[in-house]
Each structure stands twice: as structure tokens, then as C-alpha cells.
Length: 375
Image (cartoon, rainbow, N blue to C red; front, side):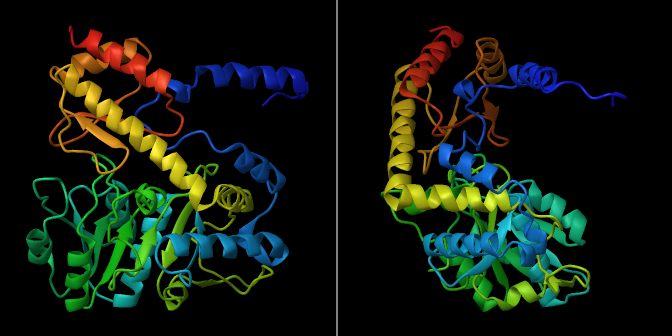
């Protein structure tokens, strides 16, 4: 730190220089986040000093959060669901499994997750002291129910299902997982961090949320396809009593208890989420998802024309392409400015078709992919 501060102009110039080093979303096909909606940015700035870690001081912001949770709960099949706005899917998953662990009270707890589960569950195992057991997948990369059942024992505290897997955008058979959970008296947590703001707006309907009996908690991130600002995740429980298993006393705050993982908590992210959800409504989100799905279908069709097929037919706006000489092709694409990623098994080129992608950009990508393949 300098002894004397710099002028605002100098500082802003330094920030501009740093910003230019960051990737532009224009050519990013690997991220599950996108540019936030302009109204989300405005709301974020208006509530930038609001701290929901001590929401007794910010009752207006707390009301916004309650409205947001009600709205997300409605999307997830239960407007009476309870919860709060987190920093993202990792925090939401931690808290859901923490509640399940505390409720179950096992001395050597374990959780059963599909092999497709996000790496946040490995963090959870380490942080919470919960053994992680990874079930096998079926032929289209959904949790294999027989494998899941074979991993359950007397120390299992929860099952996890994925609604919009990070690599393939696949949705686990939640109805079957729910039946397993109910028959073994287990919690069932649904990680819909990505899918939560996609699946409700798809033409095909899926059973994945609180409308499925046996689902106890859900993660759904507004800062992904919800177009809110970062950090804005969502954690919802079917039963309000679950929150009591996360509470700690807060004697020196204006509130008596706190159930969040973080202490200080952004009210700006809450306001941002409220603003964009209220502004877009269901019709607005459906239009955005429709646009992404049309580009997804176009990508698959045009990739097939140049000899590249998807590993599975996309369920949502995530595509895994079976690209020959994958590493070399990705290297060539990166040289042309494109950011792509890979799936683990099988190895494929993973592309996420987010709202920042335009038809013009998709045309350029297909042409560049064709050139990089040597076609």
C-alpha cells in the first residue's frame, strides 16, 4: 500500500488495465456464469452496503430476500419452501449436507452422490467429516439407481441427485432417488445450481424439485442462468425446521440467531436477484432459455455437418462434442480466442451455451472449429 493514496483517475486507469486482461464473455463457451442483466447491476449497486448477516439493521433487504425465496420456491415446486440467498452452489451444498448430518446424528456419516457430482461435494466431505460415496452412471450419464442403493448403509445420512450436471447437463432420475430416500428414511438433496433456472422453462417437463415427494433440499443459483450478479446462490428446504439445525447464537447482533454459513452476507446480491426475477418474470426467462436451446440445437446440427457428434443429445444448454484430437483442437481454438472445457469420462469438448452467446459468435465458432479440425 502506498503511503499516500493515488487519485481516483489513476486508480480507475489501473482497474481498466486489469480488466483488459480478463476474458470477454463474447468468446467464452466454458462458463456457467454470464453477464448479469442491467437491472440486476443497478439493484446491486443500490444495496451495496446492505449486510444480511445482521438483517435486523436491514429489514427492507430482508423482505426482498423473503420474496426471492418465495419466487424460487415457486419455480422449484413449493412456494412455501424456506431458505436464504447464499454465495453460490458450493455454500448451498455445504449447508444442505450440514443440515442432513446434524439431523441424522450418525457417528460415522456418509453421503451417496453420483460420479457426475460437482467437486463441491469433495469439499463437503473434507469440511464436514462426511464420507463421500460415488455411485456409477447409466449409459446417458445419470445416476445408476442400483449403484446408489448398493452404497447405502446404516451410516448414510443423505442421497444427492444432480439436476443439470456440470459436464453433460444431465438430470438424474429424481423420482427413483426420492423413493430410495424415503424407503431408507434419508434426506435427498438436489443440486440444481445450473438447472434450477433452466429446467422449469424447457418444453419437456422433468420431475426434479419439491413436487417430487422425498426431495428435502435444493440448490439453485440465480447468478448462473438467473442473470443475477455474483455472488448469488439459492438454498431451499422443504421443511423450515431444517434451518434450526444450522443456527448459532449471535448475542452481539441485532438478531438472536444466524443460520447462514458466512457471517457478513451480501444484501446487494439479494436485491439484484429480486430485481431481475421481478423484471423478467417467467415469460422473460422462458424466452432466454428458448434462445439458448435454439442455439444449442443449431450448434449440434452444424457440428454434425462437419463430422462431429454430441456424446449424448443435449438435455439443456450444455453440449459435449466427441471431437477427434481433442487437446490439439482445443489448443487451436484457444489460439483463435475461444474458451472451451472438457468432460472427464468420456473426454469430450464441453460447451455451455449461455445468454451472452450470439448467433454471429456461434457462426464464427463453427467456422473456427471446422478449420481447427482441418476440414
